[in-house]
Image (spheres, rainbow, N blue to C red):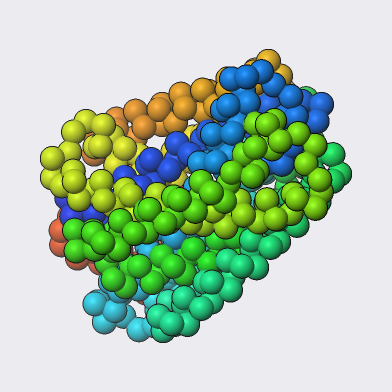
Length: 419
């Protein structure tokens, strides 16, 4: 997420609930998945789980593998595509040319790459901001694809990414396994250099994983599936049931491995298990988004404190995503508290839940103060240039200094990582 776009051009009272609620909720999935990767162990299983642990750790590892790992990124990627399609539509409504729209989206993409590079070097090696920025730069033309072309391309890319993911996971296990984020040095400078060295490869992998769901998000935006979820109940129910069911069934073999129920699996079995897990991740991400769309229909305008806070977190998803990475650095780095040395999977997952809850409280405090997230505000300013009008005004804002009409979508994404 990332799953993330700036929101300053959208009147807050006119925002759709479902996308914000989806991003805010899925940030919990991302927090849990990221936190468990900091467990320090002598040997690792696929997805960064330790090859040892007590009963509680094993149960938590199985549940997170089944419902969390690789489930959040596809959802945020789909929401990112949804948001870009919304920008395109609003630009068309404002009589902007395709050239201006493309320039606007690519400028945002370039800044997301810059944000992502800084994020990866300074905080977290598994950055998703740059991946979404590259998608905006390289695949913006897909906003003009016909529906059938979008779906065919999405299916092909999902197949390719699933195959590649399974091969990488199986190869890592064959070489003894490794955590993707645990640092082995107490030097902050060395850690930063290591993160910088691994950033290009991880970013390209995330681009490949995310492009397929991104296209599906564009397709859904053309039908206003999340803006008007009450008009698509059957589609949302089917997507939720099939997608989440696929996630559970596809994730089961690898969950048996990470929970240490299936010990010493043959290498020939790991590749198809990882492929099923990745395929389930795409289905699960889309299924979660559909389920939250149905929840938004049920909630309607009767939003309680929890839904309001989650929506505020989703509206500021880029800021909350970066807050998580700051927390990981302070809590898990060898040069700081180094909690991963003392906690197992269950303990780190609990830490992840607490960090996410703190980000929700912070986002709600910003909402109460009528303030946007600092990351969203910075991205908006860099993309559109400074304006003198109140960005929350219902009046149309003036064009940016760079000549592109300052029109934003009513729903936006990490995204994000996004996030």
